[in-house]
Length: 160
Image (cartoon, rainbow, N blue to C red; front, top):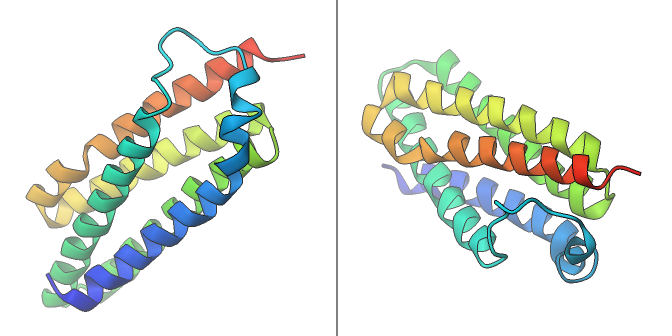
């Protein structure tokens, strides 16, 4: 894996994390505790641990896939992979702004579903390039599917 590629994917995932967390910072302590949540809601400490791990996985596995595509001169596929990664990270950060920043629970549930589909697509693209990298990032769409379920249930319980 090339350092420049890892630095690029690391910077992209870190940017998504910073943008997303800037929307949620104050709401996590003030607004979020007031919501009615389902019993399967994880304790608050789980979310930063899960997301930090997933962002690291996304950065490393995407760098591995992008490097392999470059090495194999699959330039069009590499560009499509990079675009899919960018779209995924934008959806990721956007969910935080919808949910925590704007308190738009319905649109956030829809965005979570789109993020799940995008994460599954990114995992599929990774699998086509590097099976080991795919294994490492497979938890990402699973977590996003859980987040979609959780977001949808929070929306349902807090409709007015």
